Length: 294
Image 1 (cartoon, rainbow, N blue to C red):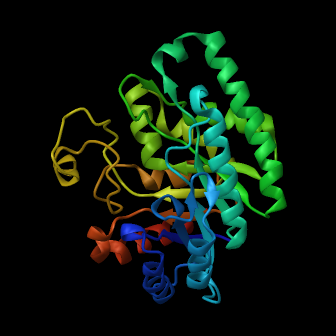
Image 2: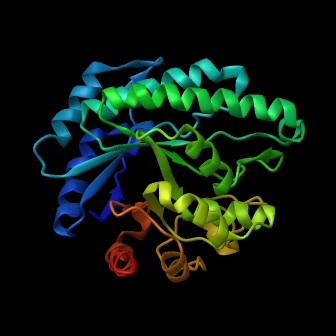
Image 3: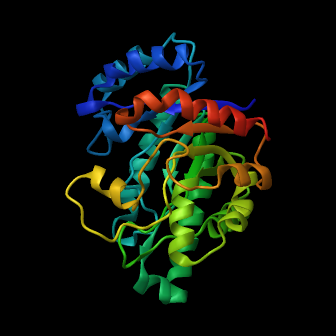
């Protein structure tokens, strides 16, 4: 079943704020809500904080809404110095996802420094360790009936390397585990492909068949280079991961959905901040038209 989802937001860690967002989603015929665990206090000191988990479960239960989860943004399994810490956090994310009956847990594919990437023997050893961890945690996620949705990134720093979608697809195809799939973030791919001079459509074609979950938002594909005081200024410059309503940037969504093959159960999940709330319905309408192409 093809679905439309929306990312919920917990300002100041307020889980109860999701209640009204669920109502808005139901009014707009949205199928699922993505819970941003990284904004909450459900995990504290690498352990589940059960009072906060109870608030989360009480907020979400009996709402006739499907859920996905976005784990901590900082999880990075190519970071060898803190690998065990990242792995533990990811395990807690899996457990929390199971507790709220989430179908998918979004977690970021690793990135590393250019210096490590240029040392191919070292870089490949880091990739191998990440691959083994994904295979292990795929089994762990299976116990909780959760699918890991591994999300593609762009370099968070200019001296970092973020693997392209085709590289991610190669690793996950090698794992070939039913509980290890992709979360395709189209804007992230656009930024990274532009930065690395790679062909966006060809890269997405490699990742598409694994992408049961897609993050939807627009941008101009430009990595952030100019210092700005507030996020809105980056929008003025058209740089960075802007999370704009569909049509505000120049991502070729129509071409992507014409040429890239996706699973039949794909979920188009919007990641749009509250500042664009008045444009939500327009973006949702555009997404439904894109789903008709599949």
